[in-house]
Image 1 (cartoon, one colour):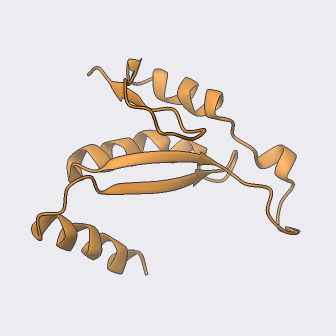
Image 2 (cartoon, helix red, strand yellow):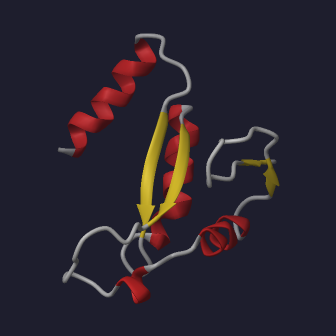
Length: 103
């Protein structure tokens, strides 16, 4: 349940955990329009958020991956409509790229 997840985020913050991160798989036509709201939620809760491209794992008949794929560049374009993005200096050690919002 979503309420359990939200309670867990609050409990982690209250317990003093830092660097809490929310991972979000973005799918075009499913939840890509929620990106600005998710950013505001993360800012309000003072947590980091990662937007992740759908991974081609296993067989999925629920949707067409080619149509649902929302690339990292598309996610950045959506965010740039609302915020100025600046590449962060941190290195993920993997394929992830970090950005900060200037506003």
